[in-house]
Length: 504
Image (cartoon, rainbow, N blue to C red):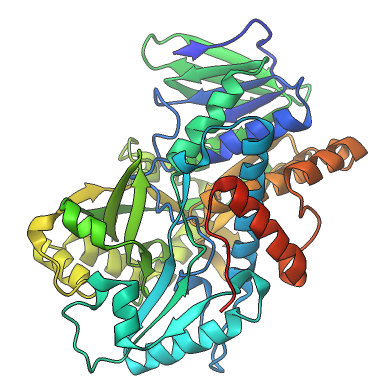
């Protein structure tokens, strides 16, 4: 289905491929910066946010590095590297500022539809892990971004924080947890649909759902020719645009390959699937009000960090545990089993082979995950919830993630677990690859993309002033300015209806 208004043409200023959180964020931001821009959105499914951005497909933590231990690795000398955690926490604060701007300035829907307060906790057991968590907290609280992080090894206090995690546990077991009261749960599916609803109300925006992009090539004049097929009728839609953004989740890599830009050469993808255990007992769901993250198993991908996770989905509290990783050759949940083999080209074969050889433990881990029985999954849950009853849980299929494989001048090929923006040197096309913590840092990623792809306008006084209006901390680091950090957090918490940080 295509929807358009009278001002949309076959030559839109911007084409957005994929109706997920990244495209939605970029589209709204560009319209705020320059309202007269025309935009065409193409999505292969019949609704927005049905793949990676959907609540059941996305981890939905509101990744702020409060509880995700994989963002704070322990170095060889025993110290804790908090640099990645600082960057992610900064980025999430930027996202909250932009969402607050939308709520205040554009009468965005009730923020509780997409963001709610929920404590973020890290939980570990065993002397070595307890020592690690203690050092982690000591390192993080030096940053204003992690002010208020509590730490405890006391079983009674931990029982109050997370009763389901502590009940049935050996009272002599060495355990520890950290707690951030200002953590959030974000429904990125609801947020994405809200952003696109805003775009629909603006002139110069056309939507083409159930349309798959089949061609993407450079015109002689430097513009991009995009051809899409209506999967229902077979009708073709053709547009030419000076700027294309590929934000199609796992579908971004094949489209980047189609673009044939030099900057995209050598990129490959490694798909990882996932599953959740979903609680079906309302009494159990009601007793857990936190996101409790543990440590990932050796050899497992970061997206598989186990967590007992309270979520708000469609106005209803849910409780999930997982994710359990798996392997599929699909790049999208509703993709094709030919996605992986068809993505292998001469230019990326070597990096993919080298990365595969160097990540054999990951492959072995995924194979073991695929072979798990219901009893195996319940045993994993009971490490975090000793008294869990298998009758209270059912299996739910999560989304697909495509981890980035790219050329490396030293190693030949490396497997990345973050997000990566690939853009042409002239800024006419950009693609976003990778997974976590993408959605939570979407605003920062899109600001950087705009600065890279719209260089002249991004540095103009008009756009600079608008950036500052949308993101009050624009151009400053909250980690370097405790007073500004507290002020920004208090403001966004008030607007979004979130818990305010309290000193401990």
